[in-house]
Image 1 (cartoon, helix red, strand yellow):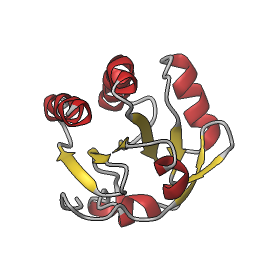
Image 2 (tube, rainbow, N blue to C red; image 1 turned 180 degrees about the vertical axis):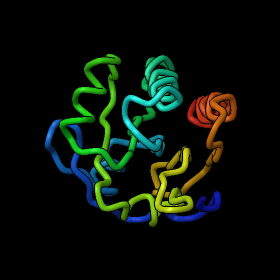
Image 3 (cartoon, rainbow, N blue to C red; image 1 turned 30 degrees about the horizontal axis):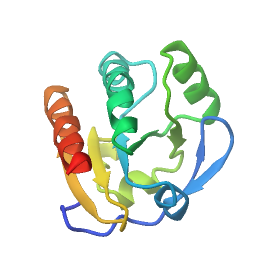
Length: 150
């Protein structure tokens, strides 16, 4: 996991709709949460993306964007997003380069459950790593809302 105070790493990724995003394009629209999850349609990952979906109204009201990242392709992400009515983009990290750059790669190349809050200047101002429990990520959302509202 990257340390708080670190500059967010540059990246280029496809999204679930076939578009392309990079760090600059995300920052152009303000601060954001970027969270990594292991795999579409798995039980804990489904709970995680739905937790962020449920928090998205408050995060968006505070001016914070949300992006999920995993290694599945855009078609899988599109189905996953539609099935769970996600209101935010899912980014494709097919080769694992984002998870490596962002400190979310675990043993055997498995994506770790890591959440980051990146401010308008591109600096990581909060982060959470919790592979099997969602409670710490829910606490992370609360901290982000406080920071965004300050």
